[in-house]
Amino acid sequence: MATVVLVGTLDTKEQEYRWLRDELVAGGCDVTTVDVGTFSGGAGLADVGSPAVAEAAGSDLEPLRDAGDRGAAMEVMAAGAALVVRRLYERGALHAVLAVGGSSGSAVAARALQALPIGVPKLLVSTMASGDVRPYVGEADVTLMYSVVDISGLNSVSRAVLGNAAAAAAGMALRYERRLAEPAPNDESRLIGTSMFGVTTPAVDEAREHLTGLGYQVLVFHATGSGGRAMEALAESGMLAGVLDLTTTELADDLVGGVLSAGPDRLEAAGRRGIPQVVSVGALDMVNFGPRRSVPDRFADRRLLVHNPTVTLMRTTRAEMATLGARIADKLSRATGPVEVFLPTKGVSAIDVPGGPFQDAEADAACFRALIAGLAGSGVTVHEIDASINDSGFGRRAAQALHELITSAEGAPTEQGD
Image 1: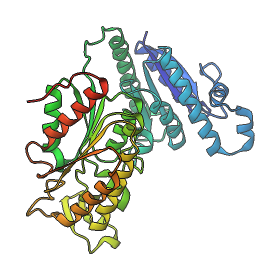
Image 2: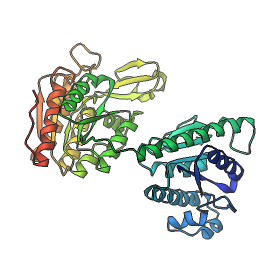
Image 3: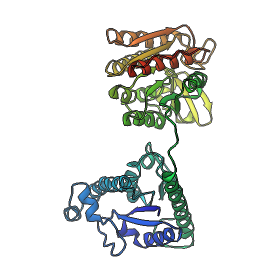
């Protein structure tokens, strides 16, 4: 029978979790309840009690209680919950996870949800689901449901919301269990990760079509910060045969302070894991902000473009582009696998072209010079292409180069594209 794992603070939410357990059982599922409340009794409800959760994290519950440091206690319980849930999954005793909570309960549960692979159903009902949800989702496929009212007792509103959550979790668990029992699809095609932005779409579409024709599955990640982090995480997991990183714009946001940074470690996982990669400088001409009024005052004299009511773009300067080129070179020079770089000398985005609002050949050239200089003697091949990134042929050439790196690394004959 499909098993839904409930993760929650039973010291404050025992009534709600008893009700959820009954709803899930009525929906045809077994239930395993994991208690992450540091002051829980949980009598008769917790299958994995809070002492066991703390022990999984290498700690003892009693000192945590005595210390009176709620933040430290929640950190231990979050780490323990992640380990407990992962072990249940690995034993085949988990087909979905459901958690409900306020800010603390959501933070603890999120660690457990994010510890599970993509594809395992994960549902969090939270009072925090109507704000900044990045801490709760991370790079995982977490489903969020806003609780509407605080999760503090049962009433007509909370029963409606939690009832929907239980039904959703039960349905996902049952479907996941059936899927595990089905014959595995005979799909041996290798996975490629690629990065895309609206202003690099033609290049990525061309590359994706070429790689698909060569027998790869191409996973496209939108370079919005979370997309870059997700691609890095997948590369780190070892699931990718290659990375076609055409759109490295998140590095510009990280450097200048835009809203779509993927963090300082972007463009490092594939190199660290020795995964073949082809890299370009797509959309390095721009830093992203929200509505025009949200652009910091210190950038008032910069070249700005209102892309839409919620997105304002800022052109990177010559100095910033030179720094970005040097940073990319430093990251790629440390790669343990094969790397090639493709530089579109006539423009790095759809708006960095002759007559375009962000055209700045001198700034682009500063990036290229710094990148080439930084890679000198590294063994990384740099291709300077007399085209803009979205011109016909650029994406295909980069994709073919990645295919050749992969087949060479595997020791297989290179299959030439037409």
